[in-house]
Structure formats: C-alpha cells, structure tokens
Length: 343
Image 1 (cartoon, rainbow, N blue to C red):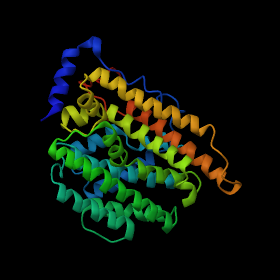
Image 2: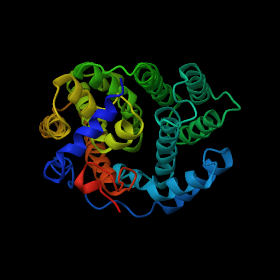
Image 3: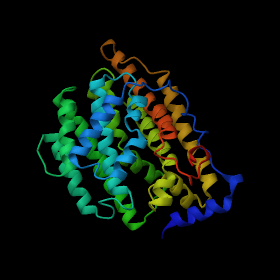
Image 4: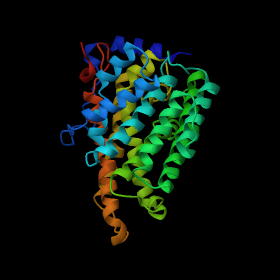
C-alpha cells in the first residue's frame, strides 16, 4: 500500500481554499537573526565532503550550496565558538548525508537494510573507538571524532557515541523497516521512534558541549531535565516532519512522517491532519517554555551550565524551525504548504 499517492490525490482535491500553512507553528519567528560568521565553516565542510566523495556530482554540490547547511548551525548554536561550530556543522552533515542515502527513494542504501546497518555500524565504530575504515561515511565519522576530542573529554565522546547508537538502532533501522514494509505505526509508537530517528538525541549532546561544559550524569537523568530534553527532542523532530512532508511522503513514499501517520490513524485529510500535528508540536513547545521558566536550583556548581544548556535547547527548537522555513531545502514549486511554495 502506497498511502503517499492517495495523500497527494487528497491534497489536489482540496484546492487552493484548503492549502495548509506552517506559520501557525508557535516556535517560528522567536529567535534573533542568525550569526553571519559561518562562511568559512561552510567552505571547510564542503571541502571535506568533496575529498571524501560524499559530494560526488554536480547535482549533489548544487543541493549542498542551495540548502546552505551551515546556516542551520548559525541558527541553533548562537554562542558556539568557530571551532565548536565546525564540529557541529560536520556532525549535522554526517546526519544529512546518511539520511539522504537511506531515506531518499534513489538513496544508495534505500531498501537495503543490511548494507545500511553495515555502513552505519562502521561509522559508529570509527566515531567511538577511532578505528579507521575505508567507507567514506566512516572516514567522515573519524574526522568528526578528532574534532570533538579537541573540544570535549573522552568520557563525553563515549556518551555522545551512545546517543548515536540509540539514534541508529532504536530509530533509523526501525524506520527503514517501516519503509521496506510500508508499515504505518500508531501515533504514540511513531513519536517514540521519530525522536530517535531524527538524531535529536545526538545534537542535544552537542548542545551540551557548546553551552559551557558537561552536565553530570545525575543531573542529565533527573526527571525534570529528562522531561525537558524529551520535549525538546519531540518538538524539534516533529516540526521537521511538517516541513519535510512533501519530500518524505509525496516524493519518497515513506510512511515515516507525523502528518501521514495522523492521516492514516485518524482517517482524516491532509489539512486537518496538519492542524492536529501543529497543535501537538505547539503543546510540547509551550510546556518546554513553561518548564524552562521555573527550573529549580540544583546547586551553584551546576546551575550556570544548566541555564546555558536549556537556552541551547530552546535555540534548537526555535532556530531549527526558522531554518526549515528559510533554507530552501524544504521548498518547491509543488509544496502543499503556502509558505514553502517556490517558483
């Protein structure tokens, strides 16, 4: 069953009076204009991608240039040093490269779960242990390991590697199985998987590193902070599903998208499903902000780092939404969202 085809037909029947909007996302337009010092970061990442063969033809280079990926880091890491920003951008690009290889209908590993697992696990081994591998993504992961060890401790890198493992085994591989089987999960099941498949757990660890130091384990797993991390991960990963609906569902026939999951499970049309999804995201964003406004003290030795970390998570929710809207990666002449239609 390719529900994506029926989704597209349903939208075409809605007509101009039923077009959906992303502008009702409450997390949009909350941040200051992004920093503008990222051009050298963008150039250095592009050079590495070309050297590794991860940008391997003119179309890939053009996509990279048009999406302006480094501007995502400018939106979501406003206080990072340039050295930190380089590591952040390279990790984001590893995620984007892997995502395009496995999620795109023309991706190198699309529908090939065992090959996908092999290249992902090799990259994880390179990242965690510093083992050299021949595959370009693994070589990129090794490069990122070296950048991160210049900025953080070996202990932090192991925690970061754990978050990458969770992203792969509890997120990406499960999403790939859904894609192969065209299985549409229930809404709650999907949200739990999507948080991991999005890689948000990995970038929240990066946020910790850029915001002034390592958070102690006891505080990282405190129920209050755990809830805030979960809200950040859900709000950020689910608003990505809004912007990427056309790419994931209408183009790549993926069942792994919140709007599509809500349409199928609730048996409603695209516009109503989008509104329901945006309500879900707004509720999470609102709860996150309310919790951020009344964070209890955990002690003078950690309160400062914790405040900076929470500000970093806020920047991720709101800055990434602004980037999705403006970057061009999610715009097209046929977008079902008025604000993303691009001639």
